[in-house]
Length: 186
View 1 (cartoon, rainbow, N blue to C red):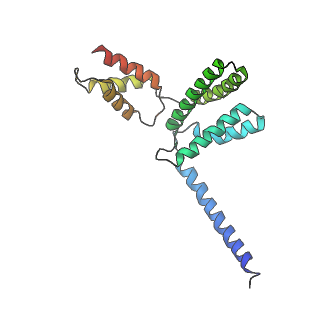
View 2 (cartoon, rainbow, N blue to C red):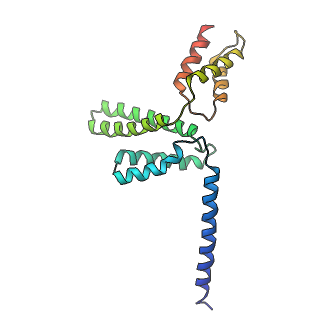
View 3 (cartoon, rainbow, N blue to C red):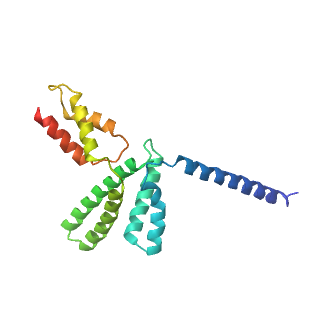
């Protein structure tokens, strides 16, 4: 009887495994966000970088995938291009800081390496469609109009603006400068 058990288990496991894979594949394709443009492309970019032996792109994509996996275990997973754009911007700031440190330490080899990583990150940042400046201006103007002249402050206005564009990729520097201009006018 012991001779038949492993075979039975193996066939039962392979049948349930293929069933699970079928549902996992179905679930993945049905929950993929239609608004995401760059995030679903990451895996195919990884394969392309591996085939081309493009080390900087390979390292950056692997680092981004690791961050996405780590974030999936937290309360704020990276599920769309808006949150992915925030991650890419964070990585761009880190790369710029590293380039400055390496330049100060006179390590040109590391500067070149980080510059190659920065170029890949900038390519991803450019590929993600952002909220147009005209729409941002409208959202900011609405938020400022919601407050009385005497009660206009940077914090509450930024809170309203960020709530209105939540989850959508946008240029945070532009938003901050625009709100500072409008609050500073008082």
